[in-house]
Length: 83
Image 1 (cartoon, rainbow, N blue to C red):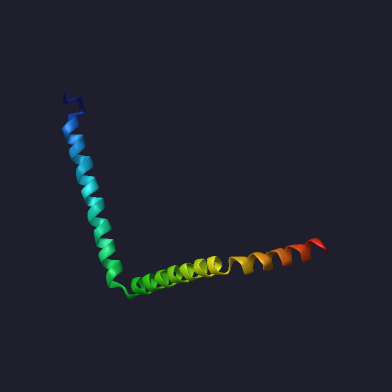
Image 2 (image 1 turned 30 degrees about the vertical axis):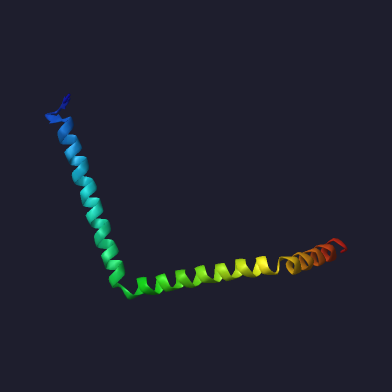
């Protein structure tokens, strides 16, 4: 079933959408290639990995010392409440 608006059929419209999507994909690929060539992208990746490692270490520390952290939090809370 092909509808016709101003000489364009549904097939032509779909072809235009597919062509536009292909253009967008090619642009995205080119941008990613450019980012991988830039040294700043490498630095950004290194910082992201560093932040991820620090978050994991923080979570492990909180889990390992949760009793001490809870005691400290309670002491701070009771100190503030006594003011």
